[in-house]
Amino acid sequence: ISLNNIAFKEGSADYGGAIYSYGDVDVGNCSFVNCSTGKYGSGAIYMYHDFDYSGGKCNLVNSNFLDCSADYGAAIYGCFITVVDCNFVNCSSDRGGAILWVANNEGFVVDCNFTDCLSYIDGGAIYWEENAAGYIAGCNFLNCVLDYDLDEGEGGGGAIYSNGNEDCHLYNSSWNPQ
Image (tube, rainbow, N blue to C red; front, top):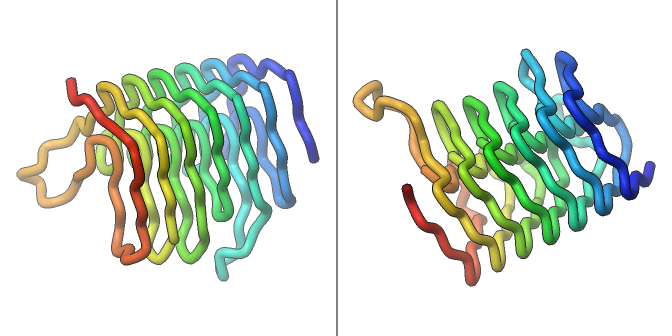
């Protein structure tokens, strides 16, 4: 499915407040405002995956995510993710303030801005699940924070948290903590 020039506002569901997909999704020039979920899936886009971590591919270009929230991946949750020239502002979740990558799959985040994103456990902006190959290039992380008591023994990554990955790559990106 291809979605272009659409504004999604105040979408809410158990999984994927705006979009829940089993198949491939291409999103361009869209905005997601105040999308949320009360369960595991993303507040904006939830890409379904099987237990073998196969699922649809999500390609996002030039889109904006504002005030999205969820338990996991406030803006995007999925296996095969490519995100280019997108903005994430004031997104929050328990894991992956903006994006949560699911295990055993590859993802790309290029030329994106993450501003005031918050996680309550891991990854203020991005959470990489185990064995997910990730590439981040030319991204800016401004005031992305982790709001968790590290004395509890868990939690980490004000901007990015990688859980058991050896194949994570970060290029030409910057961050400015609060």
